[in-house]
Length: 68
Image (cartoon, rainbow, N blue to C red):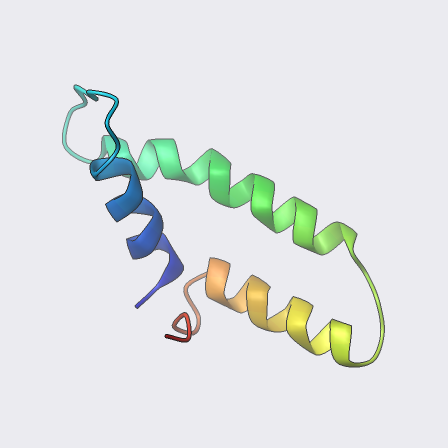
């Protein structure tokens, strides 16, 4: 499953009643995803940590699926 799908499902299942127009979940998810991308990107490192960082960023961008 893609990270964006997991995040949107979490937003949809939240106990806070959200009354949004269609597509609003994506609008709510975008700032969260952007924040995570900046946070992961700030941990610039080499070696195995760099591989993990690249994988996490690819998951955020929807390039690869999230491991189960």
